[in-house]
Image (cartoon, rainbow, N blue to C red; front, side):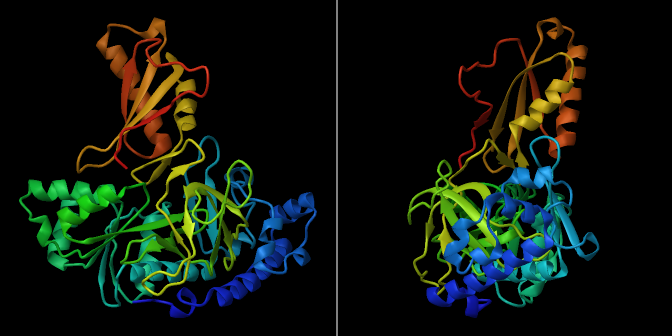
Length: 433
């Protein structure tokens, strides 16, 4: 099923006309209502009259994550706070997180693109959807919830966790679609085996999996275990949350809904457009958002893009799975983790050196595990087990309060973590993704 055939299947010429008109309207809108963009336009010597077609987008300045942090909490909004219907917050490196505001129209837009995503994955009106993404400030749960309702589906708002209950609900309610992180689907499989459940007899026929990087080999494993079709969804909170792009049943790239999010792929070093099929950083521009529209937002995600028509009939451009990042961020269980967050914690705790490593693993069939290896100062490396345990617990508690996820802490002797004359290797990612 194609949820919105008019926009998902329109000719490239028609699409370009729509993008051009929407870009002109959005540029004029932010210039009128957003002081942040008024200053940005002035510093670059441009005005809305310089934007006549979508091709003129290259005249606009880039927006980066630090712009959102520097204008925390509400400095990038394009409407009064009293008119904002919903607020979400994503994790940051140090200091301020990024805040995203949604108008009522934006919630409707989010519902629309997520409805497209579910239908793109093979969902149908009347299907029951088990949403096992987290609800709250994280955008995953509510985005999936809104989209399923918009598509005429029945929602089970399970949120994440309580795995045995999730399995019982699946057995009793028989939902057709599961929406969660791919690693959580494998974790649920382990729990199912422990209670003697035959995973292949689950009611789930479609998985809409995202919020963390995963490979085609992991897709095959999930599909083999659960006997379902595992599809990839892409999004980021600064743009809207999940629903920016979604795989169709052919699984040949993720369809990016470019009538509402205009994509560019640029060379991250030069800022110039990458050629079709070349890897580059994904840059996204809102074309219809009103609460907090962003222009040329640098996602830091490295992808490839194709504009060839898909076998499913959709003409929207397709992006590859995320091939890497231009920064040092890693994603653990759907949460953005920056080494600098760990560093900030360690610098506050007496007895630790500013030398550390993050080791990320994904045990077979399990959730991501993050171990933080911390060097101690010579004077604190004691044989007293209680003293070391107390310090380890303190470090763990401080880090977990910042990241919002559980971690393991391993204290190591001074000078045991490798030094580098160049950029320190802070992250060892042992996941097969």
